[in-house]
Image 1 (cartoon, rainbow, N blue to C red):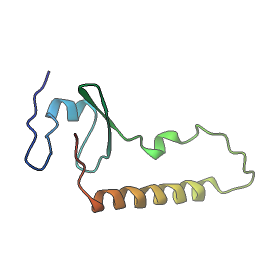
Image 2: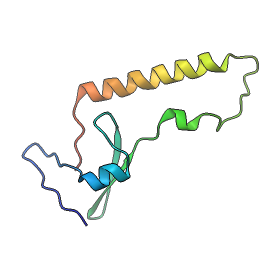
Image 3: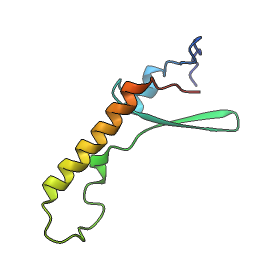
Length: 90
């Protein structure tokens, strides 16, 4: 078990062992949810990890351009989230 202190700004530092286990760094977005008396933290799923999980039903579409467009859109959404506000846990 690890301990963390909540700062005056409502922030905590995730212990290094947990950050390494979840492969978290400054650029990672995390998802939090609370349950009775606990906080759950998990890394947001990388869009590229979904590659190939859905069959192409669109016919003759350039898959590389489709992937490039999806990655760019996800990057823009992530960049906007990170630039708008810090991520607080709690």
